[in-house]
Image (cartoon, rainbow, N blue to C red):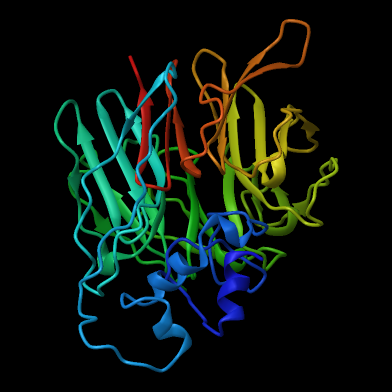
Length: 387
């Protein structure tokens, strides 16, 4: 039973950031974050119920009112440690106080941007963090404390953070200050932003929502797509050729800048789910990479017209993919999954798992540099290169 199923079981309907760590389900109420096949044992029932009520699970099940249940909620994040000998160090920012709504901090970090000594991290419950050099982490305000699902940079140098209820934030000073950009009509959420050049960019989200800007992000226009499925990734090779990917194997391709779209068929290896989702797109040196649920990983060398599978031997859900300047392909996902793939001279890939059997965090975002990978995820976890 997945998290949304569990909520339906108890008769609760949550939207937006009411409970900010539940994955998109068939009701299309939530953005992706966790596998829809994760069992209830991923979070104990008592812990789940306590999150719904600071006075404990009994208040959810029986109409009793106990005196003395005024204890303020606190963050409940289990300690996380990395195995010895990994090429990463764990950095966990200081925990914030409960939100203005009284919600304890759940520590879900979903996106990371890195450039030289600058780090910008986004997360749920209005988490927007900035760190430069050896300075401590700074926490920046987000309108209404909305969940953020990622952060990217445009070729012109602006930073863009995006998330729940169509939130789109822009920074022109490397993340020191942010301003809101209004989309009309506002989607339930934005889950991906991509800029082709300094002027042309796209933002994708809930129920087939796709927006385009041609003035560097000042104005955005809604585009029509032949799908109402949630979109989790958008990628353009140039101003004309692009792809969107998402829920239930949604993969569409355009060659006219987004005016018309055609489905792309992908050879599907055997998976445990009938319709897994595609969660991430990335392009480098003429190759497009597509990552999805249950270990799905593909590559395309013809601009997204066709895709070939990359076998990793891993069947966890993949939420991010990128490639370092040295040619290493990195894939991150649920249950501490971090794979580093090096191309073999004779074809194929050598797959390494630098974290071994680590399962302390679901990795929701990653960033590739010249030679290193940086990863963020649940449990307030940020993994940075050890050197």
